[in-house]
Image (cartoon, rainbow, N blue to C red; front, side, top):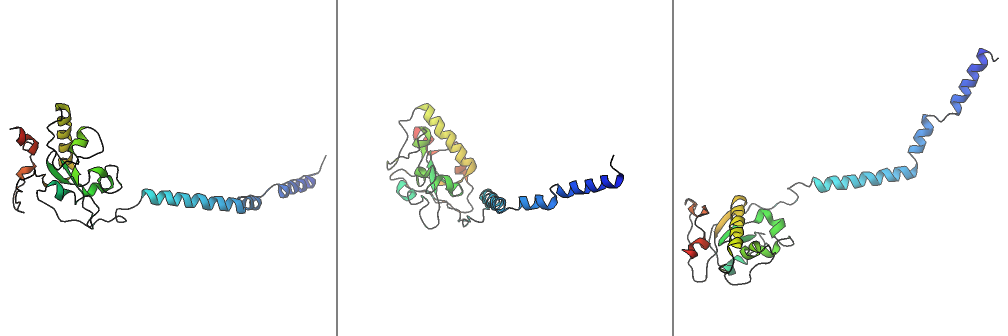
Length: 197
């Protein structure tokens, strides 16, 4: 049998042979592991920056409120390519300022075809194309397509600022004043409804 002092010396030898804390640290801090940790950290930083991009990075100057009736030719100038970047879209005879939805309706957006144009026919037929006609009276749309246009108009009224009416050829624009109540905002009096009366 081994004596007590012999047992203590054997335990101390086995502890010194076992991998210690220093060996574990040197394994973790190997050059390959440090490189992998740096790459993972960089990728996490890029992902974080992508999802936390503040609106101040893409600051759009607050544009003055635009309130006027336009012809199709005048509307074409507001496709987002002009210096102020304003984007207007016409739906069911009404023009809306969709500039705050620029990433959708502005240049490069999925609905850029509607920017500066009458989107009524495209929205009614679920097609991302706009009418190239001088003025599209939508008279050839069936009742289901017209109902769809009215629903889109209601959505645009809720989300975007009303600019004015889309004028037919020869139609005179309305003069809007700042103090005037916006009685034209009521969906009951749309230009499409007036043409049927």
